[in-house]
Length: 339
Image 1: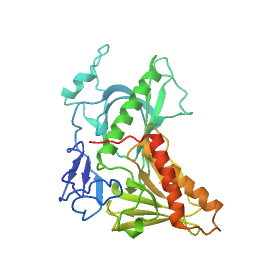
Image 2 (image 1 turned 60 degrees about the vertical axis):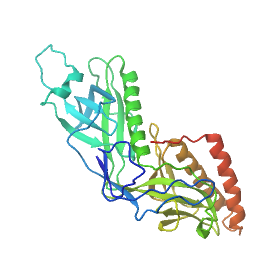
Image 3 (image 1 turned 90 degrees about the vertical axis):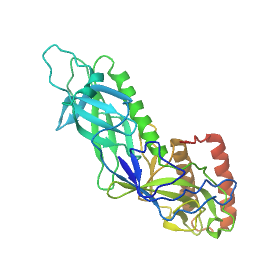
């Protein structure tokens, strides 16, 4: 469902049928104790693009009948959540009074998905309210929820609702299934690494580093890139967020100048790790790591606004931030996904 433009020989994604690669290279290992990465360097930025298949492999995490909002009204469909994506199928026509066994529908060739999508790391699942929905379904009020796929060309929204006596409980099951699948897909795109706050020896550009680690960046045409991002202490009214090709920090891809008026947003959703900084949309490996990035960027924004006319030594400022980051990382006990 997703194809990688640069394959890591020692780092294979969780689902090879979802993330197929072209080319070959070896990944850099994570930076430990401010030492240089081990192994050959990457020759290009790791980029992933979406590609759709005809079927989703594996046993679904959850597969049931529910309501799907299409064309301004709800219709009953069969929704299946897999570890790599989801599918929506129409409920087959059966004689009146006949029950449908959803578990046996996989063997029915007539039941084909009308919508099939791979999960993107830039997806959110959450409860929602539909004020226009004032009807009941079989005597009960539906419990709606929404899947949003964030894209540079425009977001995609999928509205669903559970119904019946246990509508609220069933909705929570769907939220957990979607959240688990999206998190596993997101983690599978990251190499093993640890976030680092200390500069690399012999790399002058990292001396004012506050924190650094891998992030996914949303790009056009349903593509995303894996970049090593380094946040620097503020100096003369601005700070830098440098995006590197990899953890060697010797090839810059982009430099974002952070100023006091920069925009910082956190995306809402179940176990969501997306956030936006000055127009750049990122996805962290976990929600805890997103908290660290947002806290650091937010502190810098406050510092810039409060000390925009004060000249400070960058080494001193970076040292203070670095100490604060280390304390925050220890307190938050960041979860590390190792696949």
